Amino acid sequence: MLVFILMFIGFNFLIAYNYSAQITNLVPREQTVKNKESFLKEQDEEYISFKNEHNIQSVTVKSSKASHEIPVMYISTEESKGHVILIHGLGGTKETVFPVAKMFIKMGYSVVIYDQRNSGENKAPSNTFGLKESEDLIDVTQYVQKEFDSKQTIIWGESFGGATAAFASDDLSQTVDYMILDSPMSDGVKQINKEVKPISESTGIPLDYLNFLGDVGLKMREGIGFNQLNAADEIKDSTIPLLVLHNRKDSIVEFEDGVSLYKSSGADQKEFFEIKDSNHTEFIMDHPEKYQRIVEGFIK
Image (cartoon, rainbow, N blue to C red; front, side, top):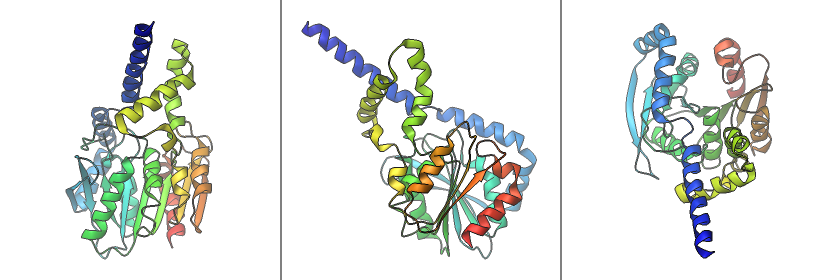
């Protein structure tokens, strides 16, 4: 009987560890590189023109919390109004947000873009739904403010990158002037459930039990638990002026995630813009001039 119990416990620990490996690598880094290549192929002429028109520098920032390096792309403008740090979503890279970079450069800002963990050239081995990724954002922000005489520091994050920004927001409250979140994720466990529900349905294993195993595995692998994966819990102490844009019909990240971050924010100045007619994170592509007007109206 004891042998059976030990085998059962060992089997469940194995499932937990392997399950946590899956949920911390939903989009492998190699796939993000392929996504970047596909995106740049679609945007070929515009991206080449963008690179030819601007002085783009590449640097690396050493992670202060782990052993990896953070690949950073810096695009300067003359008489810059300040610096905007852009954070891509899950499956993206620093190159896939260049349309956003174009907008901020047009507005007179210098732009800093970096690869999030387990994305592009960032070889950190896992994703944690924005929690540990926020450590990279803090490192990049500190680098920017140390290296450049910036009049303003603005953080813009989309989707998964919005969660990264929200997790870092309290720590950055004294140094960042504005935060803009486009279709942001808040609840990491909810996103995990979207991925795991088909497994639960096909195997008959209750979703709650899979979550229990995932929580155990995540603590074993990353030292964090499911109860730490809601960015709304962190943004409540942030005083950074906040703009959230989200589509009520968003099928990738639920509208309620954006609302939750907006309502939870401790900022005195905060605005919420409901997107009516664009898919997840595509509002800036569909309506670039309107997007720019909304952002300009917020940061003035």
